[in-house]
Structure formats: C-alpha cells, structure tokens
Length: 166
Image 1: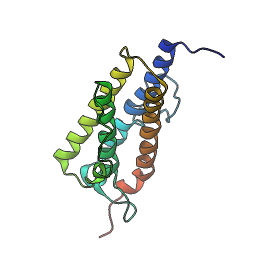
Image 2: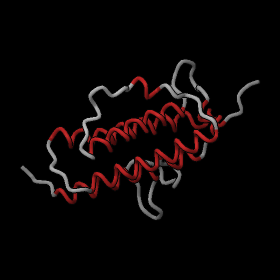
Image 3: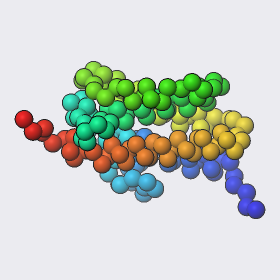
Image 4: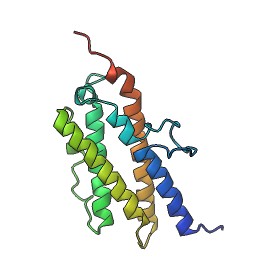
C-alpha cells in the first residue's frame, strides 16, 4: 500500500479549505470553484445585502442567511472539537436552521463570524494532532459539507439579487 505524507496531506487540505472559505488565490488555479476571486464563501456572502440573504427563494426552504448560520454552527463545532471538547453529543443541528432572516448588523456579524471560524478551522487543521480514521474522516467531511452549502447558496444568488415582485 502507498503511504501518504501527513505534511503534504494537510497542505492540500489547507489549500482546499482556503479556496472554499476565501475563494481562489490570485493568479492560482482552482480545484473546486470558478476562478472568480469572489467565488468562495466570504466573497459570495459579501455580494449580498441582508435583505437579499433573508429572501426565501423556494417557499418552505432555507434562505441564504439560514445556510450561512448553519455553516457557522458546523464550523464552530469543528473548532470546539479541535480544542478538545466533544461538542457533537447533544448538538442542536435543527436549531442551527432557526435563523432565516437577518438585519444589516446581524448579517455583517454573521459574515464576520463565518470568516473567523473558517480561518480558525484552517489553523486547527495545521496544528499537531494525533489523527485517527474517525477524526480524519470527520475533518474531510466538513469540507464536503461546506462545499455543499456553498453550492446551494451560489445556486440561489441570481434570484436573491433580483428585486422581489411587489
């Protein structure tokens, strides 16, 4: 069986997470997103007003603000786990969807916290840690989770930015 150098693996992991959170690095190729510098989570959310982020594009489905709050909850759990806690037992995943509407101040704070938690997660992944199969799988799954919700958000962008019918 081939072996994988841990340092190389985590360099690759950091590259992918950085692209998802901050968007593609200027002058670099991309692995997941379009080359647009604003294609990452931060740039995508920054392109929306609070009112746009709060729109329900599909009746009964989550708003972009709802997806953003859910991602904040998820990333905060990962960072608490990286700090040595077990935040998953009793985690209120349903509750992470309760915020669907935000005002300007809440939207600004939600975006700031998401950036902060995303960067903290990148830093945590670079820290020395004894990895086992479960912790590595959970960490990699967090990327897929982030990419899934970023895709859902990006699919709603054009409609969210349209002026609602009166």
